[in-house]
Amino acid sequence: MRDLAILRNDYAHNGGIASSKQKKCQRLKWFEPGQRMQPLQHHYQELFEECEIERVALASAPNAYKTNKVELRGNVPLDIVDSFRSTTAALGVGTDEALAAAVAGWCESNE
Image (cartoon, rainbow, N blue to C red):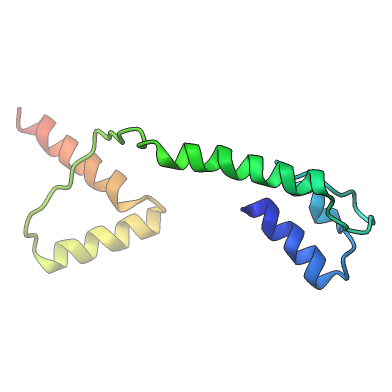
């Protein structure tokens, strides 16, 4: 679909002349920059073949997504939450990463 968007954009907004953006096309490599864009029968055939490849891929079930992370819920006083958020922001650390480290530290100190 990205290739089609690039083709359409050049055709509609660049007077039907291929721009350097045509080099970004990954599958529909039809035109060179500066070339007049005139789709031919074999271009349409290639488009239909690529669409069929994608249709088959989309018709199959996706692979199961597995993660080793789970949501941890609990009630924490607001002043602790505010301190946690400001500290993670100041350190440039994500809240998930900081929370995982805090819980790991708490578990280690209580084992």
